[in-house]
Image (cartoon, rainbow, N blue to C red; front, side):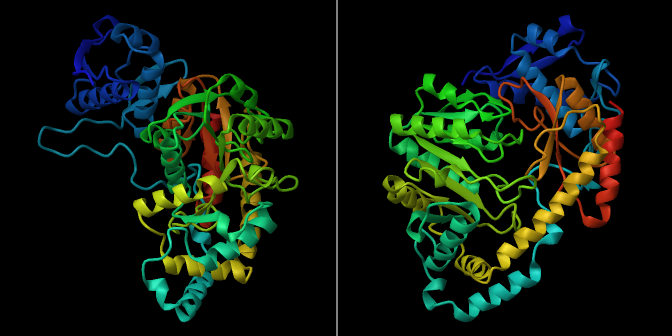
Length: 469
């Protein structure tokens, strides 16, 4: 990694130095962000100061415009900057500098008045009573070995119930022996990334719009990433033919964040490609249980379990705090994945596994999912009715969030800034790092997490913020 090199953007209208790391795009962006934060903290950039256009600043610093756009978007989301379409990017009024010995006022609330960020379920709907009863039952019947070091694959009681549930509710072709219990999809992806790297896979294809954390996990395992496009029919799987990749990570049933469903033709094309190349498809069944319009769509794993590693989780159906997930692994990778699990943390909590198995055995979990599906459908309908008719909305058929595509990064930044001032938490394609490079802008609206008593007011606030643009 190269040493930080001071750069000036005096030609853009500001005589400041930026310590940027030339070792990589992430370092460049981080250096620019921190320099701007420090300039605002110290008072060198006062409230209302107009920053250079992203194109001009990128030219003067000798970096990509995308790096500047991402940095501006992140600082808008944090409250340091304010972006208004047609008016450029300025230092926010709320980002007042602190004195040399005093404390700076927090630019971002520690708790949103209205949390409409994506990927978050309704925490108040967690079935506390049913979980407590299941946990008590698990304690009552737990064998002594449940309190010792168990199998990295997970408790057989849970894997047996999971296999039955996934077959009847999600259409998987799976047995208890095919399943590995994890702490969630994040760990499932870590295990798969490390396993594939150990088997010689060096290049992994990902959707062009995808979660930054997932890309980070794959890169940390040593993989080179190649992006394939996404359109109304989901990932453009035909692009895989020209990519020498040993694996692909997809969200086929509800592409995150666009909400597109991978078409039947592309599913077959994808599986033929995987078979012919000896490649692995990593399937993230994101929001798979929550489809509102039409029949549920079966996962890819049910079509060809020999080439698909399927990952699911309780994070959206129960709560992220219940650290349970599962991975259906093709047979030739199973032992290697279990070895990675053993090295990671040996096994997930046995009592939580037994409690979840009890919910599955008694069909309490099925009933909870059905209730939450109706609950979230009503919320989706309320948000769709409140969005200005001039705005395009994607992803409404399923899931826990909607995507509103926008024309440019400044429009996204302006909406996020206005929402933040109202205490409304939203997501953004650029602000949350979904696009690499940041060539698409949009606001992501989650409709699940806002408390029941505040949901109507949250929707009114959302409508007001969107209506100003």
